[in-house]
Length: 174
Image (tube, rainbow, N blue to C red):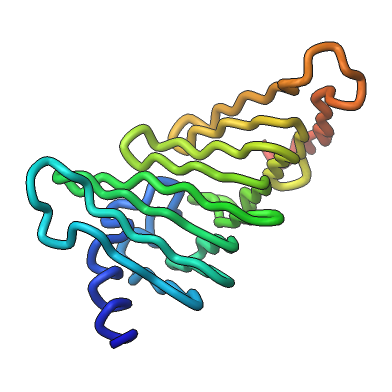
């Protein structure tokens, strides 16, 4: 029965992935986990379809790879997905469009909203783009604009300050 569940789940996942290098959008989604459940497959009423994957979850699509201990995916009636991944730590990696660079992110929890085209990392959050890197307790990254924000959620605690390393750009790279 596992192949049937995986096939069904592949049809509901990431119809229009947000972070994908443009070529990734046309690639199939591959999902592996130890266990999977799907609720509301027939979409009765206005309820979202909910899929829960647990145990060594690995989602790949083209250059995008997400690894977590648990992933909860909600799909609305319009096909938009929101998911929350949990782990110690959740990891995300994807090649940037038209660049030979990757965006990588980590956190204890990661939320993805493909309607807003945004990913958020919570607790021990870290985001790396090329050689530049930021650390904080919360990071929000918008893939279309490449805008990100970081905060420490720790007030004046010096151990919870935002840290950033921004490499000088070679003028020949611009």
